Length: 307
Image 1 (tube, one colour):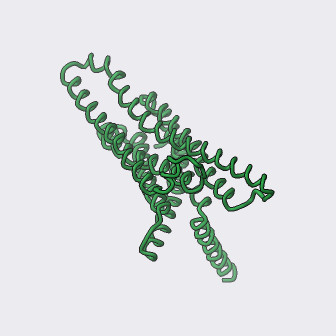
Image 2: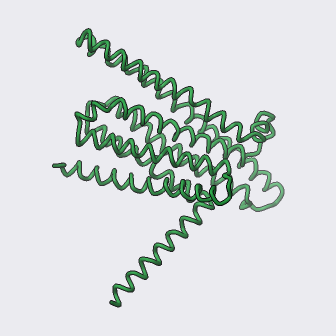
Image 3: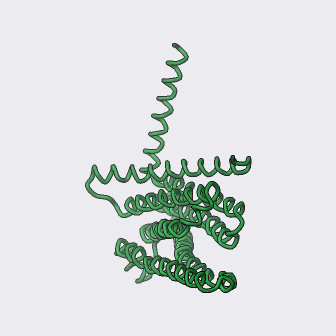
């Protein structure tokens, strides 16, 4: 029997999971249907689709982890390595693809006279792919660190249980450092993209004022939408990352881990709704679906009331 507190957290986790899966599945489905119809897909739609798929996997891994932690701690310990690897892979691509999206908005919308920036702007697809494939180095190092830690733990367990207890903290520290670096670098890249977007918009607005034109032009609106996407990602990921760090250091306290994981699920669940409402195509389809659902429920309610 679950306690009242566990029941409340379970309900919150399920709501976050359902909403997150709905938003991410919607993004992936709309872009996939467009791909099938046009037989091609734009770079931004490809990034959004891959990001949505990675977050679908990430939400599934977090839900399985929490369910095993609360309902079956013994099985959770046995499957901890598999859960950790699955989480590392899905979290890596979720973080990396969000960073690629930030870079895409920067290169497509911002305007700078730097030769390096112009070179990247003309080759935006190549720049995004370089970030994506370059990040695989960090994923490989994290996976190698997990494998090395497992071998060391097995060796210590077989030789000396006392030594195992003494070295437990020092063995987990390199993995924690690798994890922090693997997430800190993309986070810093996205933050840099945001600062450059702000500076680019400031320059653009100053130029518009000098020319005596209004500030609500297409370029300004594009800057604002891009900044909304990046700011929401940075804020939500900062909360998510902080929750993960607390979970690692409080791994022996089940309640703390469950609380942190529940709060952390807000990031992959809610940010996808921001992506939907910032993207004009996704927003129009989403509102159209909501209108159709509302009309169907209204017609059903009317039939029931008249019968």
